[in-house]
Length: 251
Image (cartoon, one colour):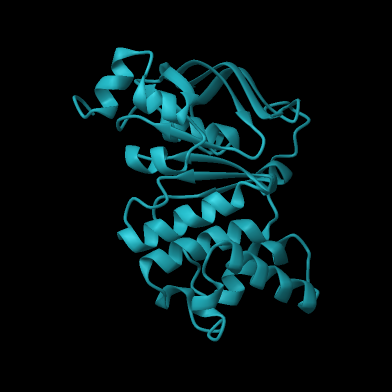
């Protein structure tokens, strides 16, 4: 399977403090890569490095190479707006916009210049279907997205990302505040979506990584301790730190 993203000796600093330590890994095309580790291990910093969100904060500096499709993401020639269109992100807390379900989904698409009503209608139905939400909201697309349940709001945020037709989807603990039924719907959606997208899932729920990730990486204090086939990482990890974390001895 071809690599979609390649990372070589990638480090992140804020001012003088280092948050990621020479990370090297590949993300394969059309896989779900799970990232696990205790709080403060660098998972979110890693995720936000991929679509260059970290540089929105002052003091950010990086070293090493992070490339997608062979192109350096941090090259001065990179169009950051286009990059973030290609690499969508869903955050831990759902953040629907204070507008209708329909307008939530097409918000970014309209900003990118698409106005054709038929095209927008098709994008809304397809995106909500892929996010496992269409059947629940198809008859009330004009109600506010804020009136949906937490689980529905998170799937709406996923649909908003999908409407932009990205190549990579980043998810930062997308089910951390959701009930088991809503969590299952998100996981079902991810299993379907990987046929079209490359997905990186940061999760504090090791069982979730075991359920949905094809490969899993374990981060600890800014280091990538281990990465490999999910089944192998969870049943016969190479590193003692990985085993201790998975079995609940720390973290």
